[in-house]
Amino acid sequence: MPQAFVVGLTGGIGSGKSAAADMFADLGAALVDTDRIAHALTGPGGAAMTAIRAAFGNGVLTEDGALNRAAMRALAFESHDARKRLEGILHPMIRQESERQCLAASAPYVILAVPLLIESGTYRERVQRLCVVDCPEAMQVVRVMQRSGLEESQVRAIMAAQASRAERLAAADDILDNGGTLDALREQVSGLHRHYLALAATAKGL
Ligand code: ADP
Image (cartoon, rainbow, N blue to C red; front, top):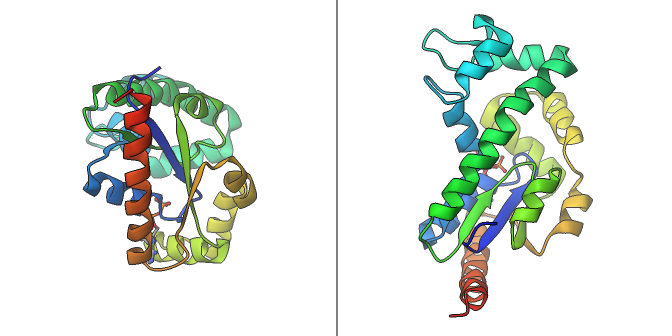
């Protein structure tokens, strides 16, 4: 169990998690981002690449030794077993590294950003507080299409594989409504930041 006061931050794809996480970090929270950790693990020379190469061969590697995401996605899409094997390699490494970063953090509290936090029992056990970034589904679709160039049906398929909006809201201690402007989001983040500073101070007996 990490010593730091850890706030889990989650939300559906395109809800604005990364935007909110960066705002918390700007205010002085430590940011531990499992997406970023996964990218580092699977980048050139990343700590997961030896095991990934052993499991799937050179076909899922780029020339510089990083994970070829398109090739891996195609393989994982075709084969449930391949996806499970990839998760079996990556998930424990992500968990371990995120825990290490939480423990090493010296900020008053940690924002642990996990896209699939609601779906994963282990992360829920590790956070003292759960903050959900929320916006209407139609807005998620537009934001992701603009960001990634995916088609609406592809975005909807990703959303269908995630927890529903209602499930996320039901699990939340705090909700950031990101149905408005980024300035409106920043204002809410600022209010929650003050709240988390107070909660963290109480938890540490300060
Ligand atoms: P997530 O990390 O949840 O997938 P992001 O924070 O990356 O979502 O946001 C998805 C996209 O929508 C990004 O391009 C981001 O800049 C944009 N975005 C997020 N919130 C807003 C907002 N309130 N107004 C306009 N664009 C936004």
